[in-house]
Length: 54
Image (cartoon, rainbow, N blue to C red; front, side, top):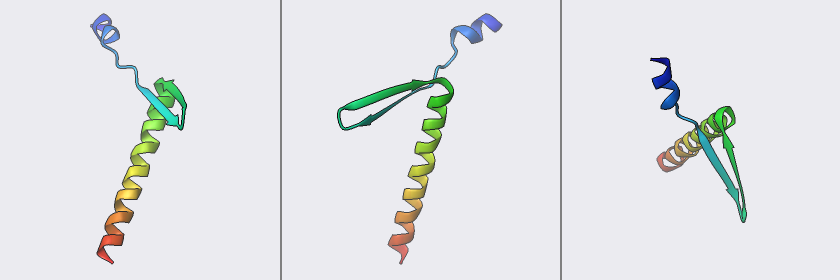
């Protein structure tokens, strides 16, 4: 069973672009970048809903 899990192991990948420069990160750093992106999008969504309700 351990060979099956190693063969189909998911390697996280995140690409960050700013103007003409792009950087791709893998593994734990990619998970961190994806987590930061999710938190930032949730904060933006909540602030837009709060602004709409005012």
